[in-house]
Length: 203
Image (cartoon, rainbow, N blue to C red; front, top):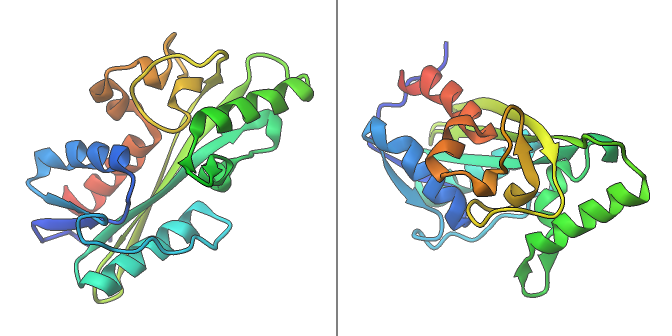
């Protein structure tokens, strides 16, 4: 049995404004107030694990330890079939620059690697998200979600974040970045993991 969440406030252990907005929209129907890590002035812990669940656990545990609030952390990324699953857990690292994250640079690098490998079309990929919900008493629940699709080039769309302009989900002819955010939030990898979280802890 998964543990039911009984509180009315949850700390989302992210400094990513796009991710926080997405979570806020997802939690709204459940009467839970969302607080972001930046609002609480929390430092970003080093993500030293090699798996999504490992890094999500680091973030959730650090947030709980710093605030005493139940915390939800997510680690997500894109796995490209023709790149043997890369960038995967290192998706954000591929976008790092001295001036912050540049995902256009990361998507360009991904495209260039696929071209070098002469990867056949369709170029399959999947977004993965793992959620870890941690309580102050040390209890944790883990939920994983995915969404499959193909990579497009040139990139398309202006909404979303990360690799969204390059990713066209299965069954659609538009990218995540061309979708209305509400539509994306219904079908995304995070939505898949979130639906499992809601069913397990809030349903």
